[in-house]
Image (tube, rainbow, N blue to C red):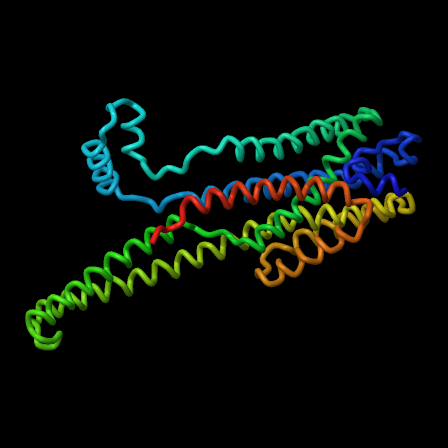
Length: 330
């Protein structure tokens, strides 16, 4: 039974071999829906992480007039030879650069689950799965479960920031402040005070004040967008991690459970994972800490935790480098 606990996927696919502790076709099929759901939630979590990173690097949308203006400025001020690359760059100078390292990382994660899906297809077809094939896939399944928990923890501790949206607002406010203070200085120099200035000049100051008030609303909207992005990404990673851990608890008692009991427990497991949706950030962070604590206390997960930690740390470093490149210069 200890050997079974070390693998999530192994028990998903045990279908009658006595060398695999006597798990039978019916019991394997009974938990197959939970196994497929675990795969789906993990793939969705990988997509959520990828989407979060892309949104952090994306610029705010531009109007057609802004695109045209930026293009004209880029072409006429460029000292490089005009070619297809320069034209494309002038049309979209704010496009985030491609990151092969990140693309490879996420593609590798997805590929692992595509491999799992192939094994699930064999189960659906009713064929026996070789012991060696199960063993080879076991560590990957375990690592991915731990990895989802660690990704949830990383997102919780380093929430998403829409840097380019923030930067655009900072630039707007700097321009408005400069215009406001310059106009104030001019009016005081020409008329002695703001109140003694012409009404038209004072109206210009009020217009700037109103525009700054509208920009405040833009900032609040960006903060709300970041909060929603945090909640959706954290929720998806945690759903995958919780589902994996709950299935691990079922595997721990697998040999002692009959088919009817498993049939009753699987819907409960799916409901527990589904219950993560719709919760606030405070709950999600507490639950993430709890799952991470359980993993750290279980020696059977130590190897997978160490491997997953290295992979997640690589992703975190990549993300921070991308963030640093977008910071606003003073």
